[in-house]
Length: 449
Image 1 (cartoon, helix red, strand yellow):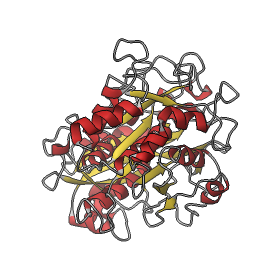
Image 2: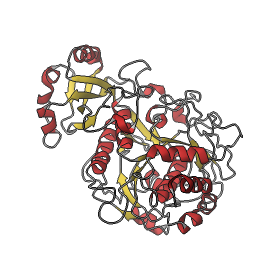
Image 3: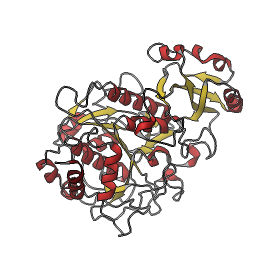
């Protein structure tokens, strides 16, 4: 831990906090907390609204847990001197207006390090996904919004690679003002966008450039969970203000949210059992934000991680048996493992169980192929995840979320997957490798053509 600790403080709603969420923020609405020594509130981070589940138990993630009757809270961000953290926890424990204090964990892209060369191409992946069949069924992603929560997207680079997606600038976002959204430096996020377009070439991209602060002075990009909470709040607000299932243009109002990032090592977090912990804590504010967005109708995908025992990322620091951390293992998301085009698991793909939901990953998808050209190979579970994001975006053109809920679609994906070992679920592949033909057949059988 550093001498200064980043935290998120979840507060019950007050008129002052509600007003500050839409205007200039100071620490004044936080009563005696603002007077504590060693606590520095981030006045550039206006309070983020977050609803608690109606039943008060965030482990009960379901569509019915959230709604207008849920308790409205607000999340603020602060830095706390190490020597004052215990004092802050003690004082807030006795403050009825404080719901909790949580670690503001740093997260990074889940980029692959090995093997070095690509295995197959994006054309092989498109064939395995039977993209031609999807398009024959009108499933090309037209009008469906795919959110790339990553390092940023570069549209000109994508066009130079022969793909020309629509782009929603108004819903795009970055933690700091002035970022050239849609024209960000070519990198991990642009790779994810390209891989989404393999199955959904007509989808509308949204750029949420979460991972845009340089880590420790190096070249690795990282972000903070507090910024992820704001990102998800923006997306939730969009879904909640929808006048109907269609936005007046004939297109389904739906979101498919790609997250090819995560936490790599327990040292990035507070210990399991601490109320501030993220990895195993369903009450952590970001884990609640994930459930809230899914309940509003979003499909959310997370990479399983690259801490597999055969070829782990160096950031795993040799820990290859700890499972899948935090929101990457949330029961309201699809957790995606990685396989090569021969459907064999690739060695860096993190093995379950999940820390929030045990039976993780859910399914495996294709990775480590020559595709975007950003890297020698589009690799890692970072690439497997947007490939599956594209499949879902394509399908959502015909089966929007008010017809097939996010939970029902996850069930269909798991049920239709091709079991790699013939034993159903396992911690390497989940329920198997994505099988798009079987998935479409199941959706037609259950929900009509």
